Image (cartoon, rainbow, N blue to C red; front, side):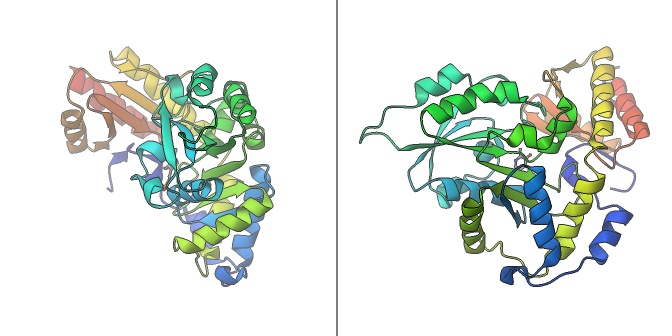
Length: 340
Ligand SMILES: *Cc1c(COP(=O)(O)O)cnc(C)c1O
């Protein structure tokens, strides 16, 4: 992908030289014995960042979310979730295998259902209904164009969940993008949640790694499920070092990705494209086309610009650590030529 501009996802970032140095120098031990000092440090630092008692390091965001469901629910328990959430849309139906929870999916703008709708869907306790157990939210919201959801928008949903005795999980794969875009601390966006997952391998630029954070006893149980799923790693400090480096050096710079995405969105609009940005955008641009997305993707790829499809006539462009201003210019040029 040497000379390509790769806007398919922020997962394509490669570790920087400085991050690789930090990984090289990491002090390690056997983490299944709890003896990897770098993993232990990352778990403490991440818990603090997310405002929780404890966290557990896992290979992927998907594993963090699936373990979260396993830990919150028993077989058949009901999880309320927006139908565009990653857990529902992009995790291969994994919940049917692991937690075996029942999903009740809701719709609504920017990845949020209304509090009224949530409340209406929570049925009274009765032998006919599954046990309502969990509300699962996502911030930033990927399929909603990377929408950064403020605490005041999430709070009414959390309140409905609490009234009905539901726990609340936040898929915070890109919670750092949300905090940077909203100019608030990460912990202020996670304070109302019982558990939070967060990825280091997206815009934060680590090669691998996510965490699940929550109360200490919850995380103790989550560690058991991580082992079940084969996610207990040995000298994982090499990977945790990348996460620590990302927290220290790559959070504030997300602002640059957001500025580039905003410029891309604005100039695509001026070139006549329909761009539906969410109310608080982050590092994603969604383009609605009047023709087949795969055709456009192939054409752009031939010119060295990679983007992904978010629907039959919808594209997603994601800015990240490895995208420069010149890459944005080149992308805009290709898009305007496509139009002309
Ligand atoms: C990428 C992503 C995940 C899962 O991440 P993987 O590490 O790829 O498993 C979870 N939630 C959201 C919103 C994501 O964008």
